[in-house]
Image 1 (tube, rainbow, N blue to C red):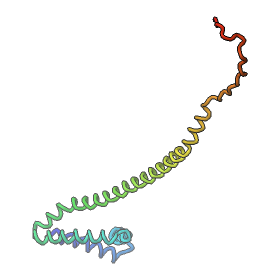
Image 2: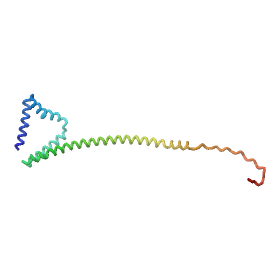
Image 3: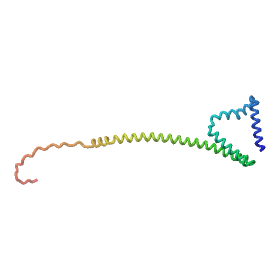
Image 4: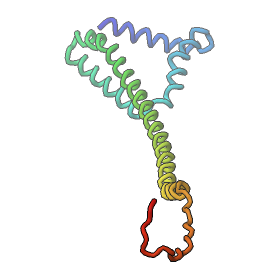
Length: 164
């Protein structure tokens, strides 16, 4: 319990120095670390993130209260893993959104490519009968026109034998 009092005492001393001596380099550094940097980060914090932080603080407070003296050790040992878990949750969300964006882009490109291919196939399918008829017509040989033979004259050899 005394270590917590020491931490609160040091934090209070730092805040007193920052407020009392704002022109000293130490006061400026403390003010920058404890006031300005967190204030710049506030617009980036969403209500959902604030709710998660409050829930985690409530869970830590309950564990601290239930375990009495051991609560400090329990919270202190679990805090790094909890922070890493929250960081990985954010990282996983960003990674999922990135993968989703890539997949949507690929789907859109595939849809455009599919539409282009289908348009070419449709055009080729429409032109196929004309192409086949044109090939069949051009592959035929021109027809020979038969010339009529002159009519036969009656033979002078009536009832004779023919030898070849």
